Amino acid sequence: MYMEDDKKEEISSETEKKEVSECNQKINKYIRFPIMNWERILKLVIVIGGTTIMILNFFFAFAYSHNEVDCIDDIPYRYTESIHNFFYDHEGLSMALKFILSFLIDILIIYTLLVWSLFGTNIRLISSGCTYMIVNFLLRFIHIQIQPQKSAFTRSHIFSIFVNYQVSTYSYYSVTLGIFLICTFEWKRNNVTYMFVTMLVIFILYIIFLILMRGNYLHEIFTAVIFGHYFFIMNEKVLEMIYGNDYLKNEIKISSNIPIIKETNSKGNELKESHDYETGDEDN
Image 1 (spheres, rainbow, N blue to C red):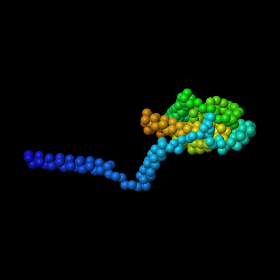
Image 2 (tube, rainbow, N blue to C red):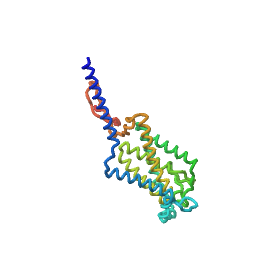
Image 3 (tube, rainbow, N blue to C red):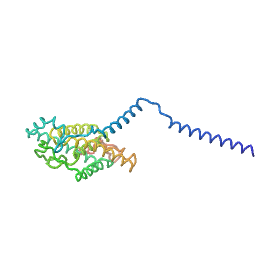
Image 4 (spheres, rainbow, N blue to C red):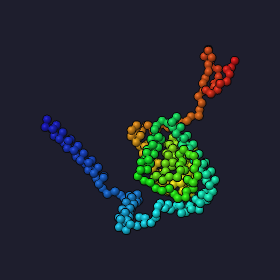
């Protein structure tokens, strides 16, 4: 009996030593100074350098703007003055370009919404768009800015569902850009490459015309791109948390294959193969 007790104590002491040694190894693994490679050095340089710049800027204020302006002064407008004046003086040309661009934007957004309504398997598109517009609507009560002066973009009004050509006090970040970008990302997520590329090209052209015709300030364009992408990703993560990872794996499938119906006679023999849209006469 004593022999067995001694063996049990030896075994227990050995297991305790193993557990302690394993614990010490884990502690030493995390406490020991890491080997310095180029990645860690770069991280340290960025952290230390960024902190140093923030401290110096607090005392010397070299990173703050000290310009005296009566209203908003968009710097890129200074370099696109001649192009903007050209569009402003040639109203017919600017109207034609705006009409084509607005027509494409309206059609593509409506087409995206219709395809999502008929073939979509999740609410990512509509939840992202609603979140984006709700936040923009709330910002209208806390931020108002004057519209760009002498704008060729709002000189002549054109009917459009999603593009605003009305003269008004602008609110912070563009609604049209964000909604169009969210629709573009939805096609990307569903692996419909031709739609994604088409909408991305039109999106870039729209940004160029906004700058050249003074439709939006540059900070509105930047924030629309950033917020549109952010709200899309944010809604994606929230939906994954609520419904699980498999919820967003289903994609929009638009099949061009027409099902084949095999007709049989009363004896059970196949007569012919016809598509569901054909209405030809039966064989005699």
